[in-house]
Image (cartoon, rainbow, N blue to C red; front, side):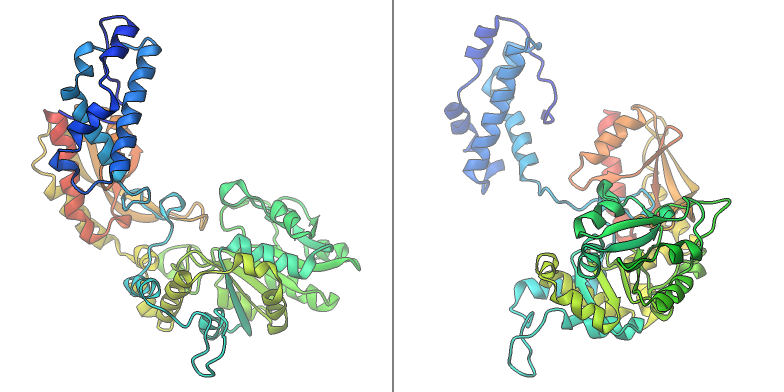
Length: 483
């Protein structure tokens, strides 16, 4: 019988001093455990640390007066505890899991999955030397940015492009380059907070730019921007509010209107698209979102967006725009601190090449494939899982295929649901909260949604090749509960 890490070791009988003297010393424990086949190949230092941690926790329990039994301090009963701790400590901290939440771009679960071709190129970049900053044509030092710049320009119509490590970095870099010490005009209703509690005004403050808010929270007019322009104005900024909506009595200045004002006032216009996309997703039942190509065609001087959200690539911040502006941004010394590495470049190039054919992109980029997946396919997937769980006794767990809704996630398209199908688990011998804990504790954790006292696994974010292992893990959890 093994014990879970952190589980209470019942301790009672004897004074604290007697119990402390009963605990075997580290050397004795190591002598017993290092001869076990189960830990062959495990680093000795890791074993020592685990033994010391378990014994230290026992001493703390005793000194705190927690109940501890003398018999549980024997080496025979402590060995399974040591082995469980060693097994836990050997697990990688960053681990694969099964996403049954129905949230496609799940920030906490790693956002967008990469297509196979991107993973192949990332593997190549790690295993082999590459021409990261070497121009093969001239034999001279090259620029890492040139590896994807041409592709980005061809796909979007922009004059120039630059890629940094995320979109917040892209915004910071552009603002610091174009507006440090000067004013940036932005609508009050667009001063959003992004992930990790970072806010647009805070990012702007770090860039050295001075924020000028215009309009009201719900309504901003072209005249608000026009009246705010002074000799100190360096930039007109539009932030696409992809992570929330203001509804009702509203008015927003369009990018086209802002570009017209910028041209009249001879001030550059910037749009932060946030979750920028290359494909109109409204054909999959979602509301119309502006594409990157449309922003470029509208005449914005510089545009920033994420690579790891709706684009479906690795984490990156992409900067597009007029050549003169992008070249200035490239020369900013801060760019060195924010640059992307060879793995991001390799993965991003592979994803961008898929966009050269829209049909191929939708089929092979996991984020787009999950958004586009028809309900009929999700129904079949849900039935496959339910059939594999038929062996579960009804008194242990109920299993149902249900209609549900999924979300795009990643701060994109709030309040927009995608019709989906899921498998509902109704545990009979444990609470749904206990089930959720057990699913998280698996070697390959399963993350779902708790709804109406049940665990829901949404099939829009569960891959076909995960069904078998998902079913096996669920049976394992419920079989243990049945006994």
